[in-house]
Amino acid sequence: MTVLAIDQGTTSTRGLSVTDDGEMQIVSTTEITQHHPQQGYVEHDAQQLFESVQQCIEQCPDATRIGIDNQGESCLAWDRKTGEPLTPVIVWQDNRTADQIEKLKSEGMETLTLERAGLPLDSYFSASKLRWILEHVPAAEKTRKAGTLGLGTTDAYFLDRLCGRYITDCTTASRTSLLNLQSGEWDEDLCNAFQIPIDCLPEIVPTTGEYGEIKNHPNQAQLCATVVDQQASLYGHGCRLAGDVKITFGTGAFALMVTGNSLYTAPEQGLLPTIAWQQSHQQPEYALDGGVYCAGSALNWAKSLGLFNDWEEINHFNRSPAIARDLAFVPALSGLACPHWDRRAAGLWVGLSLDTDPKDLMQSVLEGIALRAVEVVNAMQQFDFSNNASSYSISIDGGLSVNGYFCQFLSNVLQREVNVQSFSELTALGTAQLAGAAVDHNRQVDIKTYHPKSNQGEWLEKFTAAVEKSKDWRS
Image (cartoon, rainbow, N blue to C red; front, side, top):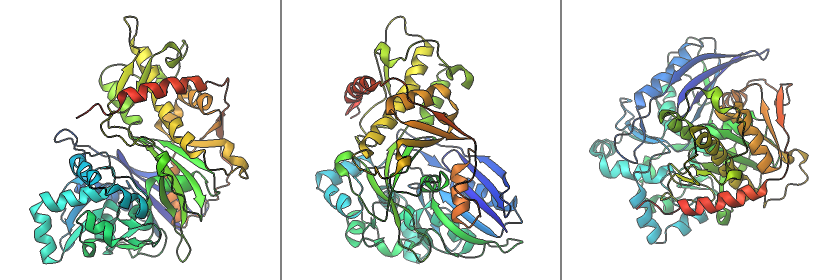
């Protein structure tokens, strides 16, 4: 048996094949282009995303089981009869619905979303984007009247076109603001509040199951897993016990902590309850999620400004930390997510002086991303899973996990061990495991561990003061 895991992320689509003997190989990689048609808009070409998924499938004709992970909150509309996209994919980073969100907040709607969906009102989630589509795209309303409207997240779009199944899995549904976390079904009151016709939404299914044969596949491969990329990463990291934490430093930074069969809500900490996964015919496993909008994207932005040329330049610094020298960077380039949830916040450098040079700036960027992640993890620490011995350490992955300075700084401020596995495709691995790949999560892999050095908690206090200055800046 060969399992193909398709990791469809914000910047790339990657296919990982896993054979019965545990051999793993990347079979396809496609870079994904982001489009910014106007301020606050972030889009993908829906056809490009679908073709990148198809390319993975074509490059692995021996696959018998396939799993796909998706971006979570990115969504679109399409014609289910023809498969034609009616809109671009509106990416999770998109903020076009900010005014709509503020209006809903003024009407007291956030009480309902927190109570039912466990989520604050924010344009990050899918619901306001779907409403925007219905209000601004005439073709969507026309297709709805014809009874062929597909309206949902990218997973539903892929599965509809690949298998003819109009479904979304429970982990993705839990990122929309439309799912009732207690019942596991679309919530009628939430749908009414966002003016989303409940009959237009896809059927909600578990993360794993047999969801249909891939059209025109030479080996009649079956789609067996569909999941949000961050939840797939959590699974791929081997996090199974309540208290296990992983952080993925990709375009954004996303920390997830397993809470097991218990659903925890923590609105005062800005943490998001979410479904981690649901195996077929089993009860859901839950997690708490905390996100940072800009991580790798902040580094790419800084590189585009010419602050550095080669990634090796920012792996080591022969100087004390920038924050120790009163220079701080707040990576709020798309606002602040957990635990602040402030889309008006703006990116900020504090402590610039005439002797500040590009290396200082880059050092502060790396530290700012790490310190934002520490804010999220600290919010999670109110939940006591002290019976879990592994909770002292945190497993991380993503592009920043190869930066030695970043990892050591993160360990120092967290005062916890930071583990980096030698195998980097943990999101795809988790998807493969969920789809049925026989890869033991306790397998022997090389792990680089960063041990905390002197307690540097005072740096977080200084950073917190800088974060407060960044808030509520944009009108």
